[in-house]
Length: 391
Ligand SMILES: NC(=O)c1ccc[n+]([C@@H]2O[C@H](COP(=O)([O-])OP(=O)(O)OC[C@H]3O[C@@H](n4cnc5c(N)ncnc54)[C@H](O)[C@@H]3O)[C@@H](O)[C@H]2O)c1
Image 1 (cartoon, protein in one colour):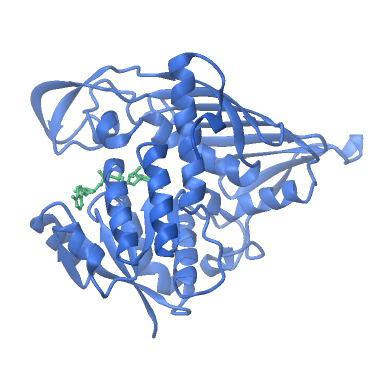
Image 2 (image 1 turned 60 degrees about the vertical axis):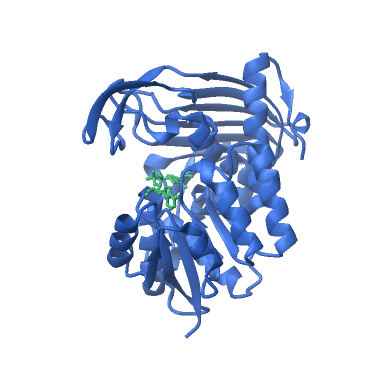
């Protein structure tokens, strides 16, 4: 049986656990062909964490030196799930060691970093994939196919939003997402990038942006072992300045002339994970929300006026990958199933199948240029053409 052997760097965190869960369940969902993903080695910040995580996940080996994992001759794919500021060094080292690189979003801290990462994987001739997961929901392939086939006519408006309240509480501690040196940006790189990948997938590239960013809670408590929410950990009595954005509101013009509105916050009281898009074409509209993530609302302007209205398409076994999970429609795929599709594409590509890995580092670099353009727009209070951020 063929194996795709993974080095998971940062295994104990949220994404580490998610990726490990998918590797373990992938053979049950998809079978052993063309290969089975195997956790060859897990790297963590300390011996203690690495050893525990390797035992929990059933990894073959562990290390507290990530370079050892990257250079391991038994590893085919390096999977990077550490905080954003570590992605560049780890990804460049992985590519130089001839490994395929799977990295969580945002790919880097800024476009200078992501450009270097694109060069590293291109020079090494290895595959790359960035964990933008949400577009892998099969319902979005329906939406994209409709748009590409012209069923909605020319696309003229896209309104997208991602609101959450995970940092709305002022008592929620300082986490690495509040620190520009570790995260690059806040809501922009953490959350708004998901909207950038969704619109990139559905509408196409962005040409120009006008953005406003806000840091609403300017200082937070330093808490040992801090995690999400205000509970847990030990408060040290120290306070730390938050230098990343809590919200992003922006306008965009896409290359195809469509205008866009992006609305993102991590301090939006009462919104847990509220993601949605509303896309309008000259011949119809589509809309989708994460609260009903298995269905797409479609309006056709060609319907007779007395039959006109939104209809609902629900995902089912006729949509790619859905049938691997469930035999009948609308049972309900969730976050982990969608992440499993991302991993499935990686495994297929790593064994040489002609699968287009999307988004690869070059697409993620373009997305990072949208982020940098938004930061520049906010700083200079003007429209910024994405071409101002070097390719
Ligand atoms: N695609 C998504 O939906 C999604 C969701 C959450 C997070 N993310 C991304 O995943 C990445 C990780 O986020 P998270 O929420 O899992 O973070 P986290 O803080 O929960 O986990 C990070 C892990 O990295 C480990 N680590 C730190 N330094 C290390 C080192 N030198 N060597 C090895 N391990 C080290 C930490 O101990 C920790 O376990 C980020 O880039 C984030 O933006 C993506």
